Image 1 (cartoon, helix red, strand yellow):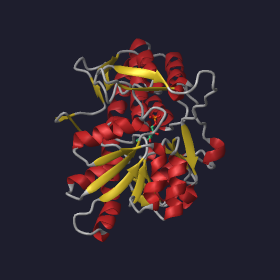
Image 2: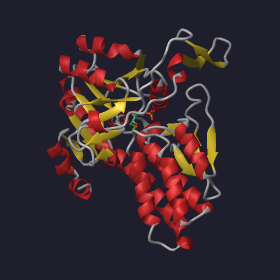
Image 3: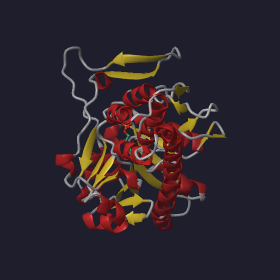
Length: 367
Ligand code: MRU
């Protein structure tokens, strides 16, 4: 994607050829700064603190984390320790485990002296594959937007609602939920996006930031607005990302996604979920019962950060002192509420058959 006109990925190898550059997403959209990750602990810290976030980017950062760890110690014991440290950083997005497994498989049966190069090689592939997958998601999702555009009166935009940030900042590039939007916009289709704020961490600010950078018309709305917009025919389709899809098509995504899916069902608005295949977890069926939901610090709910009138970025407390706070970071949308899954292999049914048919090799490997 272009950032201030310059082609940028959300993660890259620094010119030294081994340390890793990322954008510190905790500072966006108010400030822009990059971070250099030089050790496995740096990578673990960046994921835990959400300086890097979004399921595919978490996976890529964890893969680089293993590379950095192997540079320091390429033994089996260090590999296992590093795997466990990185896996524990965030529990819900399955791309993290997938990427760690991929790098581990690439190095496990190699002599120690070959392991670092093999790990960097597989990690670079993971990053490039993510970009290619998102390109395919964009092309398949484009057809959904084109179908709506054909039914619109001349000059009317296709209105898409999205939740959280499943954009290029959350992936290596292009994004998942945003890929069809960028592809349609670049093809000259008029698209307008309603961007959910996504409390508590306001990832909607990241989505609004990147849509703005790409010139896509959008409107930033409070989280509770989606139902109202849908009741008044102001949303043509919803497209969200996800952190894990189960074998039966249940979708785990940022807290609040389920409420949007309910409102979409009640109003006959198509509700699509965009995902790369590493987000599918064929080892779990019932998402509600089996997916661990991350609970994060109460501070994220109790406080709000933004730019004050004096230009400074400030954090203020919004919840009353002494009120207990709960911070569930994700929820599960049952497959029955999902109109379709936009994957790199096409738009498929959110069902056991749909997923197994599109990704037979992954389904078989999980048995
Ligand atoms: O807590 P976050 O910001 O990592 O959550 C991000 C999301 O929920 C995204 O929708 C999901 O990871 C998909 S990113 C392509």
